Length: 183
Picture 1: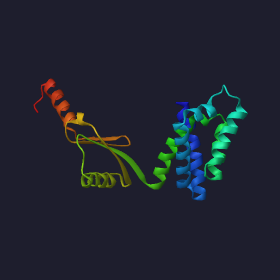
Picture 2: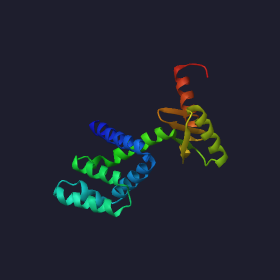
Picture 3: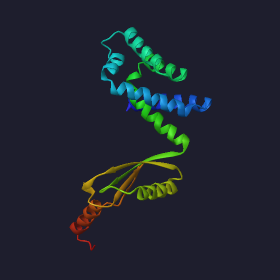
Picture 4: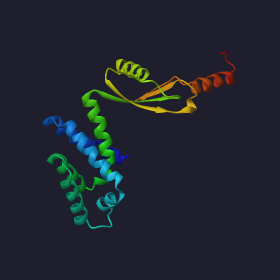
């Protein structure tokens, strides 16, 4: 739990800097890029985070990686600060929180749409529009397929789950029958 609090605090700090200088979206892309590079290269991640290597060597590796990337001086300084404070191991969580905070700042909500079969682009657009009306935000949908739903769709946006799947309807009907209620 402490890790999430630390990640949230650092993400908020970078977002405040981004809001102040109008570069929040730039920092979003740069932080996401660096986090992805480190996550994809386990050897690099170990070279930066493993305490078995001496601190000066780990910092040199991070500095070389940061210098090789074309990122802003603010994000470079932020990454080096994370290292100095022993928080570089939380980079993935910090990036995740930053992405959420930047979405909020931009008025964007991310949602998932799960269906039993492949949906037409028109159907996806109608669901996106309905969610946008409901939330008052621009909605970015992550569309997935899950044949176990049997039919229908299920959407998740934040804590809200709208489940119109046949699978759930059948489960609800079964529970109703078990309780002896009429359907």
